[in-house]
Amino acid sequence: MSMKKLIAAENIAAVLLKKPGALEKDGIRLFTARTTEEIFSIHSREQCDLIIADLDMPGPDVASVFRLIRNDRRLRYVSLIAVCKNSRSDIERCGRCGANAFVTQPLTYKKLMSTAHVFLEISAREPLRELIKVSVDLPDSNNFFFAESRNISATGLLLRTDRALEKGAPVRCTFFLQYPVTLEGKVVRVAGAAPDSYEYGIRFHDIGPELTAEIVEFIKNRKPAQKTAVS
Image 1 (cartoon, rainbow, N blue to C red):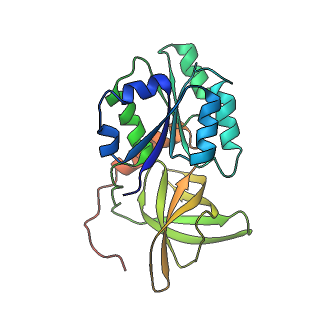
Image 2: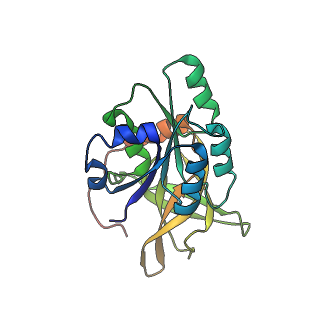
């Protein structure tokens, strides 16, 4: 199993390290950052899966660093969580900083990881009872095609198509929850291949907390499919 990479602000990392060995057991490699500059530097080097920043940590404000990450085509494919005081003004700041979700203080390991697990996909995706149809647009080639998926999470989906795609290719996926949803992402892994069929792991970027919650609720409302072969 490949390790998931998590960057956490120093005070947040201290909470996560209160359970020795727990992160390693979940397949998570932790990087500690003292400042927002260090967050950006570590992510630029490691291209991590999740960043948990303290809204008031030293360095340039979190919103500006998150914006730099989102505007960088190489770095944008990461989930962002902001930690703040449990006050209306700080929660409103979190809503404006570009994070996918926020967690309020006081912090506990369970409180942090219950949110982090959603974005790190530690638990396997539940297969959906029904296929969802996905329209896929390739921004770099002005081309689109239709695909299908049984597996979706708050951070991405497993796409089945007869089109050959390269790892790292940017994609724009449109599918229906109760209304059409369009999300940008990229191919992060080739999950498998069969004659005239390919499977790709797609990772979304820049998903807001409201849409994240809706996708999680959508998954909960779909009963898992029995493990049978899909033709």
